[in-house]
Every structure is written in C-alpha cells, then in structure tokens.
Figure 1 (cartoon, rainbow, N blue to C red):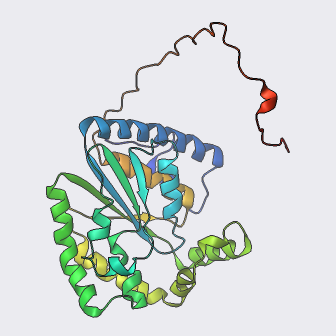
Figure 2 (figure 1 turned 30 degrees about the vertical axis):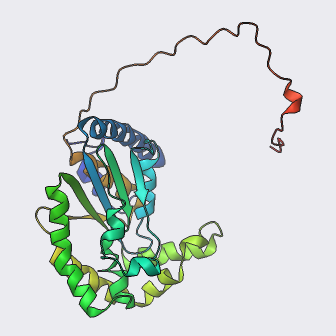
Length: 275
C-alpha cells in the first residue's frame, strides 16, 4: 500500500542538504506511526509472520528507526531481536539455529537489530569465522531465506548506508556525550580502522544474497530524519493492509464504590517528590 508524505512530494523529501524541520518531521512521524498500528492490527488479523532485518555500518541509524517503529506498537505483537555474541554452546550449533528461535509466530512482527548477516560482515572482517564458514554462509543464506519464504514468512531486508564523513561526525558526538558513550564499543572503533574491508564485505554480501525474492533495500541514512520517514514509508508500502481508521471506543461508566472505604494514604510508601 502506498503511503506518501502528506504535504511534501517525495522529490522534495530527497532534496539535500536542507534539514527537515522538526515540526514537519514530528507530524509525519506521528502520521506514519498511526499507519504502523493499522499494519500491526492487520498482521494479527491475517495471522501473518513478518521479519524485518536492519543491517548497516555502525552509527548508521538502525536503532533510531527501530525505536520509532516500535514506539507506539504492542510489544506482545511487535518485538525486537538484538542478539548478543554467541555463547560457547551456540558456537557449536548450526549457524542459523539461534536466529530461528526468534522468528515470529502467526500474527507477529520481529525486527532484527542485526541478524544472521553478522557472519558476512563483522565476523568476516574481524576474523571471527573461518574462510570455510564464511563461504558456507554465503552459499546457505539464500537457501535458508527461500525456506523461510516458502513457510509463508514475509522477509524484508534493509541496509542503512552512511558516508565516512557522517559516521565520523556521529562517533565524535558519542565520544563527547556521556549519555551516548555506551553506544561506542571497541568493535565500533575497530570498524573505523577497517572501513574499506567492511565495504568489500558488504559488496560481496549483496552479490550473493540480493535475490529477487529476498532483495536488499538500501536506505540513505546520512540524514536521520529522512532515513526514518523513508524507511517506515517503504515498510508500510510492502503490505496491502487495511488503512481504514479503527472504530471509535467509548469508556464504560466506572463502577460505584458501594460504600467501600480505602485504607489511609499515609500507610503507603510514596516516591519523594523531588521535582
């Protein structure tokens, strides 16, 4: 279903480098989040299984888009899978095994904040897998994804593309802001030293896994606001969901107290009102 920007054309949205004004951005984001709730309800009614993969360089903005997608959705129906590094036991399993455990049941949407493509990216560049394991992944991955599609699972893959200059700016912002320092892992810093190797790994990954039935969609992520709106708009466009507004609800009258007397407030422990 096409979900276009309200008052500004798609060509205008892509114009740079002028930044989208906050008021317009927030209004569009709210509109798209309303559509996401409709998509969520439709997926539940139709008992669909939806998987969305978010991949890209460090600081490309994947987490920001995921945060805006799930912000107003039901966590029982839409959840994020962000796996930590594999345990010793998981390293001995079939590579895809620990990801399969997080796939959706009917009526669910799962957003993978990085996915099985770790093997084609960080594991390849950092030497965390062998040459044999790497090439086996590139051979097996398209077959694995075709198997998912045959099981009536909807698979959407996004790659967030960020320039060298913009990544540097975001890394510097994280270094300066104590609230964001946790976002800079030793692996993130190492990725700066291996920029070209990551580019080679990404190109090889696309060459082997960008299949017609499971294509990669590239999000230009140098502008965070545009990237969020464009990605959500595209995600909505992949489904012919019901765009009608839900029926209005009315609150029922509150139950009469019937003479019930509540315990005194003074016996409860209240959080101090510092502010």
